[in-house]
Image (cartoon, rainbow, N blue to C red; front, side, top):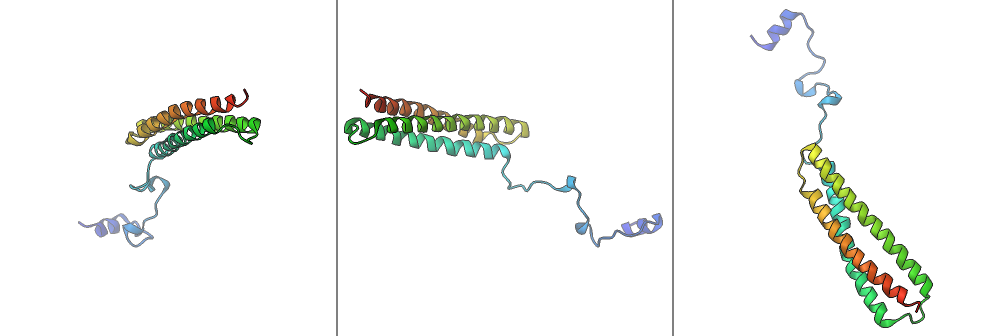
Length: 150
């Protein structure tokens, strides 16, 4: 017995669509594509990118502090330089702390979704190292700029 015999005996009209591939889909039938990255992966990637950027920036800040230390405040408005340095140090530190929190959120999200935790762990690691490097560079920069007041 094939499907057409069953439909005829049941008295049901044939479907409005031609083939099963043309059947209407409900909201439950719609799924995320297989190559679409999960939210945990996205959080981990964002944390990794910010952490690596802060780590590289901390090296540049140490170079800047060294140049300022040996060059002195020749013609520089010291109060403005100190205020700008302090504000930038605090803003980047806040972004770096947010990046660590973002990576931890991605880690928890990956565990909840039963997805890979590799990218969030890498993001937390890079952000933590970047934050520590930034703290060292910030302390160096603020001490050099603060020394100009003497």
